[in-house]
Image (tube, rainbow, N blue to C red; front, side):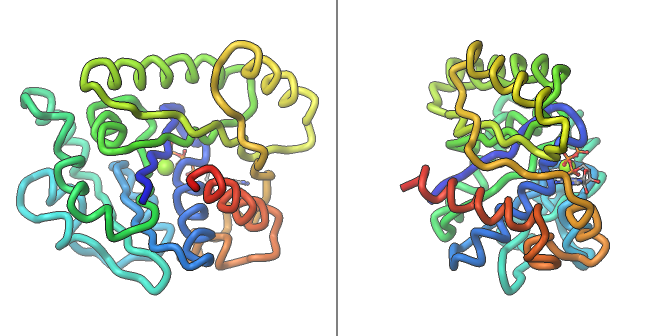
Length: 248
Ligand SMILES: Nc1ncnc2c1ncn2[C@@H]1O[C@H](COP(=O)(O)OP(=O)(O)OP(=O)(O)O)[C@@H](O)[C@H]1O
Ligand SMILES: [Mg+2]
């Protein structure tokens, strides 16, 4: 059993795509998967064409237990989100146990799954802190660009702070290079910089830039299901193997 947050406070770094496709690729191996959307944009449920129903917002509002908002699909179980998370975020600020809401809800159910993957919002807000506090591990999907490096410092600092404040042992499993294109020289330089300056693994796997990855959500599927032979699907399948090996 592993609980992994997919985190990067920059927008559009492939968090949702990675949550969905890592989950889908692990499910293909027979692993039991729970995906939780913690972003008010609700992209995860939308990408899977989920029906409307109760969401993680109802859980944060105390109206439902997480059990009641799980949507069961053939391959994975999903906890969708919706726009109400924006207001919930504001209301959480004044509460004393504000970091613990998600953790308290998933600690009972996570043992039923081999992997619980949490799709984080593009911020290091209290909702992201809830996700991190509920997790044991972190995967950071990242574009190998110079501007991404600034964000990396902030993620590492936030994780250190959570570990110190709450006596946690949250660890960064690694950085996943995403949307990798032909400008490989620049990405190699960014990789070298990370290797020299941070004690964080860059996964051997990386995800190529591939139009199929951006098309798949319009078909309500992961790219792993929609176009298994595409480059991005193959890359996510390889990444799932790497994650399984690292979690042995
Ligand atoms: N490997 C890829 N190749 C091409 N396009 C991709 C790839 N991965 C993701 N995309 C596209 O890039 C955009 C951003 O991806 P995604 O929504 O997964 O990022 P995100 O980090 O979840 O964004 P946000 O911060 O808004 O939550 C989407 O349009 C997605 O379809
Ligand atoms: Mg997203």
